[in-house]
Length: 44
Image: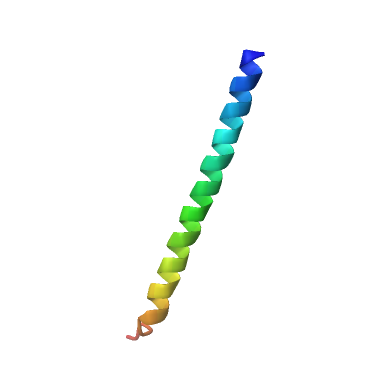
């Protein structure tokens, strides 16, 4: 029974870590897009 409890806890921890990672990645992409929108386009 203990192994199932540990497996469930690890699964829940991984789901939370995945959600947090996706949130961080989305924030980074949003910030990069905001910076790119503010800069003038690159010209040669």
